[in-house]
Image (cartoon, rainbow, N blue to C red):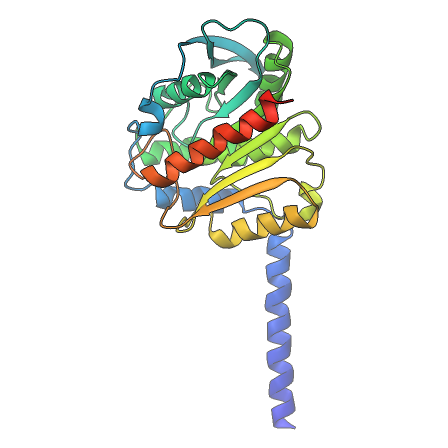
Length: 292
């Protein structure tokens, strides 16, 4: 009798823990404060110095200029538009979403490098003109957006409209790193039938198949095996959810690479993984944006 009571107690305890876990995970995505804290931990000794991703010249001459592409809460939003100097007519468009440091010179340089592959690239600003020089500032800026996401949602929808209606882009993709990686996926969820390709560099993920089901575009995900902000278990769950829905997705996890291994800014750059990820990115966009 005593043994049966102990078994019953252990069973009920296990059941309670399981139900609690399910309740906490029901949204299929990591809590905003949790992901912000995890990224802050990963970046605690980091600084926004230019990496080779941002310091490599475009393949062809490119122009870049500030543009007003949206109005959010009554305020104009200024981003940077990069495209080949000899561009004639509408080119495929890319929405480039900054890492947690914000829209700094390194993101602008990376937008130019992307444009050098034959695109009109709009580097958007989700921080209202601010950018960080230290992790504490970046954490504060990221947290403000994560706790009030609606302005960012409006910002990204208008970025898409700007590329299609003002720049005459026949196809549009999105790309983002770190904080921006999660918002690249979010752009796909906001525009599930309009966006033509999504690239996610180690950003916040959604793992509930019901939330991912509307997605109609191909997805490229690039992650680090030692990333503690976006752990590989979450990446596996994301990939499994996409597979269960038969969504076209390419998911890569780089061994010995951590969070921010391919960021335009920072001192966590891993050259071998970053260069391979860039090659996969340009190939992916070429197949799904230029070939359409």
